[in-house]
Image (cartoon, rainbow, N blue to C red):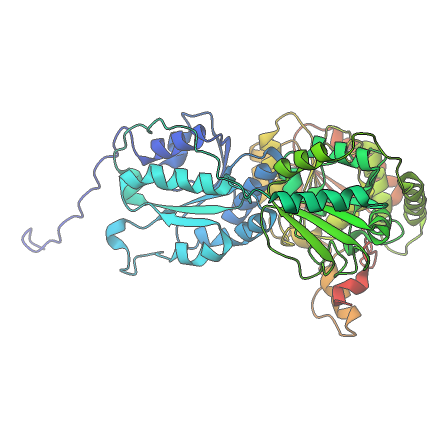
Length: 570
C-alpha cells in the first residue's frame, strides 16, 4: 500500500495537563469532609489526584459493593462518602446501592464517568442515560458539561446530600471535562444551612399538652433522630416522662440500650417471645401517647398498623410530612427537625422526673430467659442460630462495630445483640432490604475505623452476591470477621412459599465451603458444623488481626424472632 492510500493514524490525545479536573474534584471532596472513596478507578483522573490528598481511595471489585461500602461509612460516621463507577455498565451497578441509601437517608455521593461531551447522543460505546436512570433513586442528579461546571455541580450535590432529610446524589463527570485543565477550587463560605420548617407555636403547644397529660407515654426513636445526634435530648425526655424508649431498626444507637428505659426494637421483625419486640410492642400497645422522633412509622415498625394501640394519640416529629399508611391514630405532626423540636418540648415540660409506668427490666428478664431456652433447643441438622448469637455476644466487646446484611442474620441481631455490651455501632442493610450489603459494608466501616474490629453478619444467600470482595478485604488487610450463617438456601423465599402453601423451586444450594473460598485468597477461614466447635472458631477468628471468616452451618428452618405471618400481610 502506497503512502498516498494508507489510512491516517488517529491523532494522539493531548497530554493531560499538570492540574486537571481530578485535582479539582479531590479538593472539593476534601473541603466537604469526605474521607473515603470506594469504587472503580473512575471518573477519569480522580483516583490519581486522590493519591496526593488525605482522602482514602479503595478499589472494590464492583460498583455495587462500592456503593454499599460508601453507604455503611456514611451511616457510621455521618459524613458524605463517595462511590464511583465507570460509565455505562459499571455505573449501572450502582442503582441497587443507591436504592438502599435512599431508604436509609444516607449521604452517598455517586461520581461516575461519562463519554466525551461531543459524543453525547451519538450512541457512543457505553453511552447510557445515567442521569435519567438514577433520578428516581437520588435527591439530585446532574452532569458537568464544561470544566467550569465541575465545582458548582459537585458542591451543590454534596449540599443536597447533607440537607435533611439526607440522601444519595449522583454527578456525571465526562472524560474530556475531567481531562481539561482546572484552576484551584474557589474558597467559599460554608453553605448556609437550609431553613428547616419551624413548627407553629399552636402545633408545638398542642404536642406538649398531649405529652404532659399522658399517663403511659412511650418514645419511638427512628433514623432521623439518630442522624441528628439527638441522643442526649431523647434520654432527658424519656427520664422526665418515665417513658419506655422503643427504636426502629435504623434508629438503634440514638438511645443507650443498657438504660433501664430501653424497650427494644419495635415491630414484627423482632416480635417473638425471644425478641426485643416482645418488650417494645407491649409498651406501644399499652401507651396512651407515643412521641415519634424521626420515623415514618412504616409497616415493619408498626406491625402493619397494629401499633400503637387503637386508643393511642401520636405526636410525630419529622422534617418530612410523608404520612404513614399504617398510623391511623390521631396524629399531631410537628414538622421540624428532631434536634430543634426536642429543646422546645423540654423547655415547656416539668423538670421533675416521673417514675416509670412500665417495668421494662422485668419484661427483658422474660426475653433473656426465652433466648437461653431457644439456644438450648436441639436441632437435627446444624447449629441453632440462637446459640451462635449468644456465643457471639460473649466474644464481642462494647467497642466493636457490627454490619449486617438484609437477611435472617440481621433479624437475629435486632434482639440478641445489645449496644454498649456487644457493639458500639451497628449498621443494617435493612432500609430497603438489600441483600449483599453486609460484607462490603463491613469493609467500608473497617477502612473508616482502622484498628477497630468489625464483624459482618451475613447469610450465605446474601454473601453470594459479593464473594469477590474477599480479595478486597485481603488486599487491604481489613480487620473484618465475616460470620456466614450457612443454611444452604434462600431461606426467606422458601418460607414465603411454605406460608403460601406453594412449592419452592431451586432455592436450595450445594454445600458451599465459604471457609475454603476465604483461604483461596489468603483470608483465614473456619468451618463450624457442631456446637462444640463454635467457641474455638469465634475466639480464633475475632482475635486474629486482619480479615477472617467463620462458616457456620445452621438449619434452614430455624427462624429468627419475627412474626412470620406478617410476611403475608395478615
